[in-house]
Length: 207
Image 1: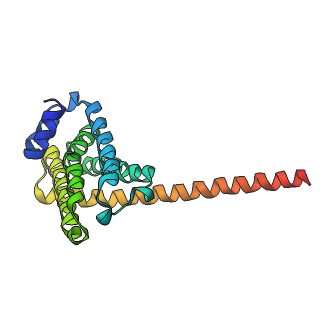
Image 2: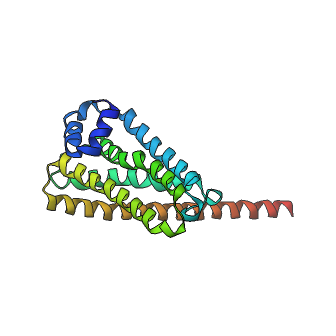
Image 3: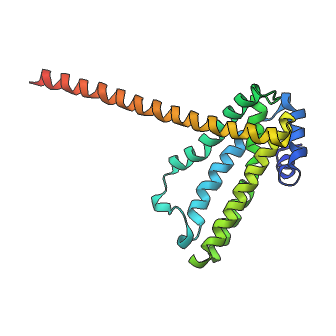
């Protein structure tokens, strides 16, 4: 299958699509996976600018593009790492590359339907905000269900074991984020400390 065929398969036959990824683990096209990640970011940025103003969660003038990129890429990367770590100690069969490919393709519904949904919002008013948000929740649930199926299929888990692994993966994701935030805070404080020292030394020599 090429990228388009596999994307369509993920939409309608996700289990078969992930069995295909599993069977081709040694020849996975990582370029197409990276392309999907860029497509996710592009779609997100486009939707910010075309969602109808009265029901937009983020207005274009207030949007921080870099923050939006981090909000979408960081969860994907940390989920792949977390899921791989958990499955490695839970009799899993997924390689890191397979997990990355499966997660990237699981985002296809978001790529395919976010812009049409944003365009649909152009004919909605504030009174239809609940409907618009409900459609977004359904889209998110669809993506999460496909991710769930990817974990189940790639590792030959039972439904119960898949739920357990996904739950532990989410916990590990939170731990990774906490560590990253802590490291960022400590690094910022360290550089601020060094900067203060440099300024003090500079003032001493200037005096």
